[in-house]
Image (tube, rainbow, N blue to C red; front, side, top):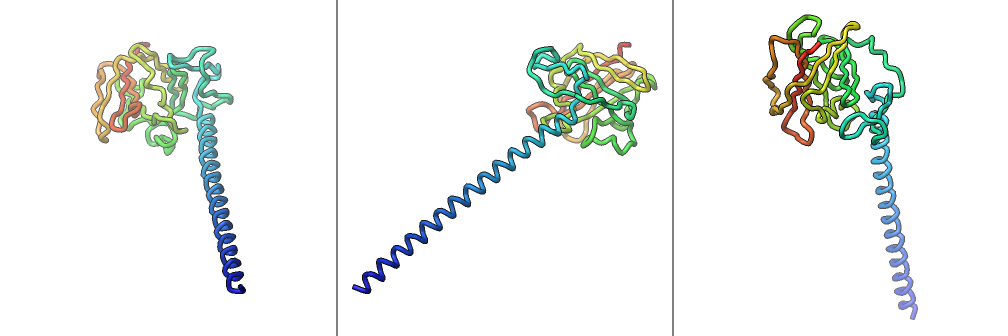
Length: 217
């Protein structure tokens, strides 16, 4: 009889231990899942904050839709503070997509594609006469994707470059894709002042899109 009682007691202890271990595993799993969810939410919030901080819409705070800036559309990014553009070498503006962004000259430590719209070495500023001013920036959805909406542009859309208080008006005349190989042959008119914008092609890991604009006044 004593032996049977001991066996029953041992079974009850093992069952209790199993229940305790199972509860701990479930609890621990819940904590891990909750922690991963909180981390994911934190990254999403931080990403939105970074995008808002690097917003490049004009201070008119127009809302954008797929067709370009219109009032009453779906809101995207808003600039609710004043940027000192005088610190930049030049300013790029594209009204069609509400883009206004300063850029630095070649040689500046801030002329870095991981921080700003980048002026490519060998570029010729419009103030110097005929030549090609080449600007590059990331696309995508990160906080440094300053050219995220270039894919909305078409032939005939306006671009503006301001240097030392003088604004140069361009119109896009050609858009084409090239392989993302590290080398790029650009097609532009050597007898005109040109602006070329380069960024990664939307929804492609192997292509870059080139937007060629010519000076019109």
